[in-house]
Length: 168
Image 1 (cartoon, rainbow, N blue to C red):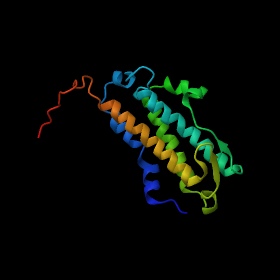
Image 2: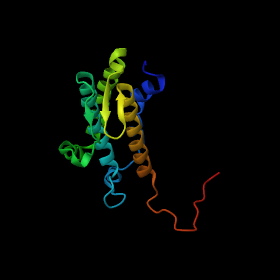
Image 3: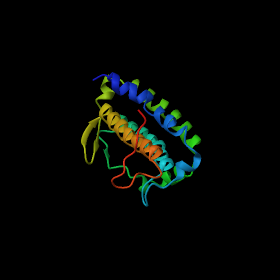
Image 4: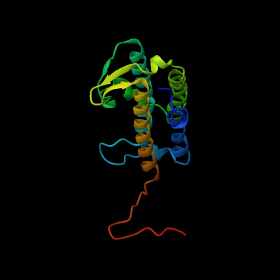
């Protein structure tokens, strides 16, 4: 199972959408709490930055150990996540780019045998390295979508029955 084009392209480029989404936003928007108990934009970006390091560690464990077992990653239970939440967004974005180069090199330079090595996720079962990579990218895409939603939500959504008039 060689790395397929879609996986390769998303692994190389998907994270770049974050900066494009954030670039027009005022800094205060990054900290705006969407709802009590929900992450703001900066916390979603921090989560993606931190999770890349978790992913690198998990792939290295899969490559070194025989079918290691992993539970669900929960950011609030990760002592390192709190320090990521305190970083400036520019720092997080630089680290995301640096770590993504590491991930890209790690995954795209694997031998065929290494691509077939497996780790076990408590919920999803036995996954090959490429399946773990797909899982990583889908998780990242979910958070990028959340960031997009938070960045583009109207601060004054229409009340029931009202509609937004779109220019044609």
